Length: 132
Image (cartoon, rainbow, N blue to C red; front, side):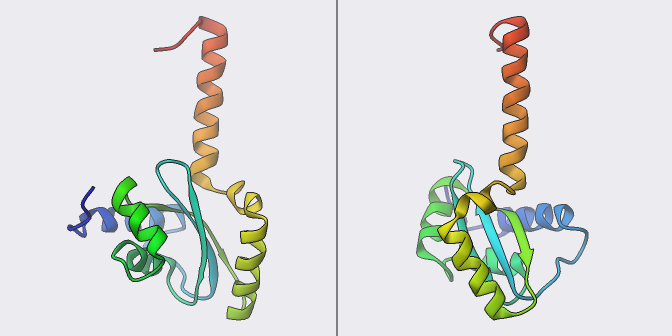
């Protein structure tokens, strides 16, 4: 998948802005979780706007793992943004979540939506036989 066009990134940023409260996503120290289409995740921290950090990742100016994965799977979405009071608090939170990633993954809005859809589908299968 080629990310030569900025359209896909801008579309993802728009989704993030709608999900996190409007035209401007708050800037400041935060921990974030990127959700990839295959269900994998990346946890990081930033001192600024999480949407800008996402842009930097996708164009190759962040983690090489995220860049390569975005090239192969598509642009990740910001599944969780947790603002912190200070940069040191954001770094500490990032380290904590990397050790206990399930705590942040459990709050991923995209994983919870997929789980709800899967359980609804499973319920339909149990009621009506196999769906689809």
